[in-house]
Length: 204
Image (cartoon, rainbow, N blue to C red; front, top):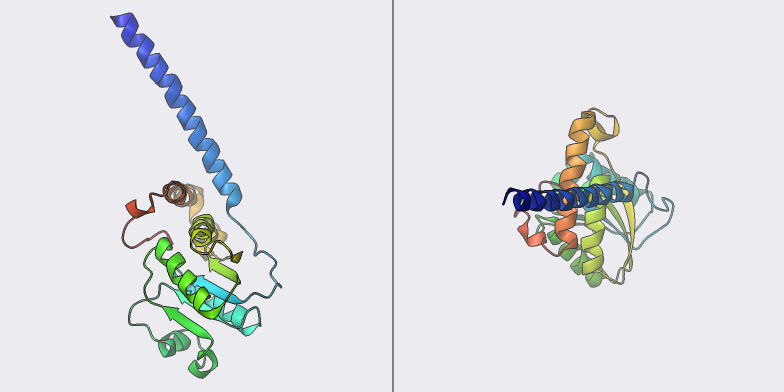
């Protein structure tokens, strides 16, 4: 009996080690997918999409719009009562300069919601190429969901901050936890289990 128990434990242990190695390899692959620099930064696209989650993302999207990177900008997942005038004031812009060029998306609270909101906006405006602005660690999952919602669109990643991560202020342990948490969310999204994520996706 003891020999049988030992044999089963050894078999389980070997399988557990194999699974751990597989997950570690997957995590290393995920880290390699996290972009550090914008794709084709001078390339003009039909639209810019900012997935909210940090003030730097919106500011980056506005600067891209003002530089002529695209004629339209969607800020997806903003607070329900936020107006264009309030957003303009918060970023030291004249509301009139953004009117007709910036759309605020109030429906999304998750990455899946961002993808649905972006797809509806892109189709309504006939947009075929989009520059996606979000955090680098969030980009793999964002692109996965966006490709599902817009399979024929060309998506150019434009990673942004946060500054604490760029400058190393989080420290290696907290940065690793941040990326590991996002890796788990990516796995859920890749397997179609995104519905298990919270109603509001704090990892965006």
